[in-house]
Length: 338
Image (cartoon, rainbow, N blue to C red):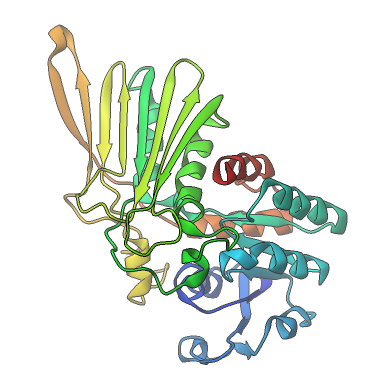
């Protein structure tokens, strides 16, 4: 293996603590050198050799750092990714990549001009539920697909404390850009760009300035309908994945355990990491002779966000194509900003 990629994090909030630092610190392809901590200095409690910079400029002026993870608030993603690339760094950029398609084009154009890799972090491609659903679809056991439904629901009546997500007029804020980016990316990863789509949003929480509900209906070739829904006032336990085809159906709850495990301090190197407990299997219902239905439990695949970082390593060191392509992000932003 070539030398580890020296990496810095722009922030050590929830995303830095859960979704990035545990992987960069344990994956042999990386060296976690520095984190920006503007106020409270907490990273050294877990990573004693870390450098804690006070601001982004200090991080970007560190000549040893090759890769910067832009995990600042979403309205700052475009600005901070541009700053990092102009400072000579490769960038792993959290979703949403930007607020508009024009900004996404400018980001990727800049990456090409400066000969830097810009990679967008879409971790939900590596959730256990999505991986299990993908496997069932690609197996052909459902026949020709009729409809695909993906959901990510919450029940949160209070307005969130992260103002960049909750304030009207702040770029890339609201539920559509937050959870919609995940659902749209899952769909694009499986089916590509839709022929057409219809988008509905609503506001249901008292005092909310931004949509807290959305629904997309995407139309694909061969009469495939894809429905993407998310709401912050959904109390029921709705399946995260529901696929209907001419030969059967597949239903799976959204029960990926990685975020909860990482939040409790489990490292990705733990043998139990990413493995859903028994009882969360997907249900495959198929129709046989005389329309007799049979139900089969489909074990959940192991979720593993480390696959993103493996892809980042091979993109930077081997110039491999990153699985979340520029086209994917451009298509995603067309739907998000509509």
